[in-house]
Image: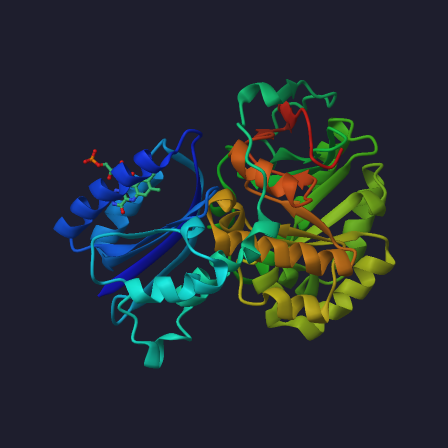
Length: 404
Ligand SMILES: Cc1cc2nc3c(=O)[nH]c(=O)nc-3n(C[C@H](O)[C@H](O)[C@H](O)COP(=O)(O)O)c2cc1C
């Protein structure tokens, strides 16, 4: 099976023709030995490389290239499979785009290729090459900066620490959702834990059927009590609920409203997080619950957006107040053109619909930097704060945001 990887990167300063020729000669030799071919384009500011060959060999070469300090901001553009090579003549063709007038570029590249042009013009690789030559990708570029630890500040929070709650049927760990522009905690997500502090899976594993939904709903009482104990103030609290708990447990919304009031909270500061895949399966019934939650003033968020199968079609039927982009899309977003394109589309869509976006699962400064540059200001993840049982841990904020 032939695999293809395309990436784009920026050369480190001081990349002259000599250095480039050395890379190309070395690459050609190394690639030929493992049956990898391709082309390396350079336009004076960026590299664009196509690598093709056996899956393992291409992966190994790309891994090596990704760790090479002579270039940075390496973004994977495409990873795909094909029946034949587009550049099958040499271990590595190369073209400095500045050596050709724009109108002759494509022809020059095609002459180096082994593409069967009778079938090849619809090929995505060729389309990516044309897009690179035309420079259409440039407007989406996020300026690269050295992301160093000194660009972040860690602060203690003002919330109290509640007593151990292992005598309860469940406990909660609080994880802050931060506003990276105003440097403040805007909400705390209450994450369920077993009485021993174990994971949500450990807590729910022993439950089934109706018991699962009743326990899920009733557990929120302890989340709201914890909010009171830690002195939540005007900050919001986010709780996860299975849609089926709201649909099947009688008077579920009334129960939530009673508990919210009993703990001195107001509905407007309570966010109900629902996972998209669970939501769509009984949407008609869930729509009735949505109406009641919204009329009571509660805030609705779709959790793990992009992880399920509903995605944009769910947004067509129902627009929540917030969406939380799933960690699988956020993870390594700075290195992946596909993830970047998806996040941009979500931003565009949510901005038209006035839906607030939270990026969850942010762990690396580079992920935050990219997301900040495209306009996301609310974040959750280990980079900013870890969940803490019965309280709130320290919070780290970026010192500057591109939105300031
Ligand atoms: C823009 C760029 C493209 C490269 N392309 C290739 C390549 O196609 N094949 C390859 O083996 N090395 C390539 N390299 C070099 C690798 O990153 C790495 O330095 C080299 O494979 C290590 O070889 P060695 O194990 O012989 O030292 C490239 C480096 C850069 C900066």
